[in-house]
Image (cartoon, rainbow, N blue to C red; front, side, top):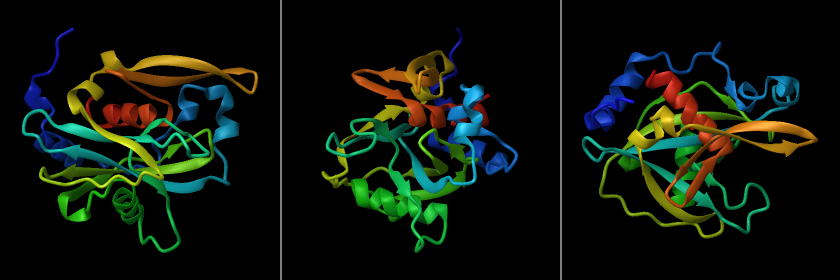
Length: 210
């Protein structure tokens, strides 16, 4: 396989790709049902709860990275899983972008003065009943993080080039409600990126890097 040069994964290139796309396309269809078409009616319905996440691409020159978190083990839902900063959209949030920025500050202390919002992917529907707006951001270096230990156990960065390489987009499955449910899985070092987070990463790849 021929790999793209490192500069392909610069923050500037990421910004330009986002600018060239009509990202929030209402006809686009992303979500857990894409790999599980027989479960579409279970996942896609009119009772979905709205949420937003930030996809924070850190500008490290030609080799940018993406900030991810490990959810706290003590949380009741999705404990210990790898995630983007984000959460439910509150009534006081004026937009998904506002919600994503608010949650990012609350979870890891990354403030908006380091973040340039450059777009938003089409919504991603989850099997757990959420409609997630993935907000794209370029993060300037020099930030200091303050982790909310009630929500996050760890924060780390993964090379954008690794996440945008389809060779790293594995597929796995688990039994759910007596059916085999498929999902993307992207192991990175000791981290296991899977489920919704991996699905959103795959959507980002399909939207900007194919």
